[in-house]
Length: 171
Image (cartoon, rainbow, N blue to C red; front, side):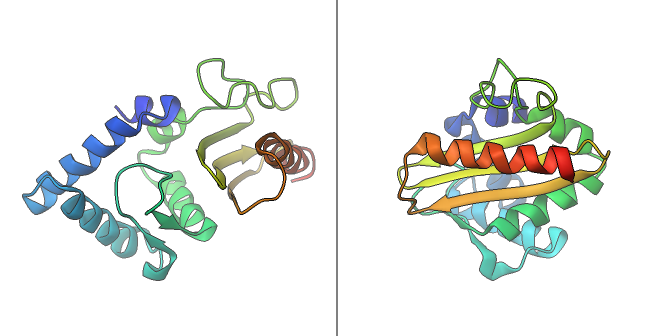
């Protein structure tokens, strides 16, 4: 299911996963119980400062969810060190992945398959968070969040891609 949620951006599935988490951990399959359980895990286990995020539902990008880029990087670093790293990273769309919304970006060598990241978009907000593999062999966790931008959506995508290219070439 995480494959579909991440690769295909299926918010309906993400909402159901959140409610299942609430049902399993709080004996109540609601958004409130699910978000409470997620918040406890993120602060207690992952170490994300509580003031850096405020989940309201299971969708990544929504008008009521709040998270800082730092909160995403905390989570990404935790998952990189976890026993679930391989499954988690393989669930993310990668640059040049023809089967995802991220697939038309960075699809030429040497950039193809060097970025594994989840996209996010709602009017006025664009996000991209994940891992970038530099030519040096280093792997970096990153999160690019753009709010209230004054250029078009595709200009923001191009800027994100240029930043990633620099990390790949020089990181």
